[in-house]
Image (cartoon, one colour):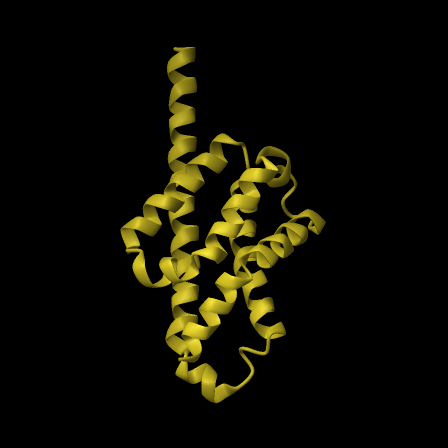
Length: 155
């Protein structure tokens, strides 16, 4: 099946994809606090994990497992003082890097194959949308907690 080959190719090239993504983030003006406040090793590990375990994220993880992971990520980025817009930029850049890779490899050119594997492409979009939504919940939760702690300290 073409979709399985596509995911295997992505997972095989996870290190290159991760390196490319980090290079794109570094050359962008859109996420300076992300790069400044998140340790480089952590950022590299997280980006590599998404690509390396893509079949797991798309086929094996439940919605609640994705939510748990990305709520945690949102909370962590909030505690690291990464603006929410930069968190979303990073998630979108992760997806965009993947799309560029698939285009470069010629994997999304043939409309017949593309239609045959529409479910995989839809799963990719759903995964990244769930990840962004869950990260936003975690981020907002951390900010609410921080505000609550500040209020109780000043009282």
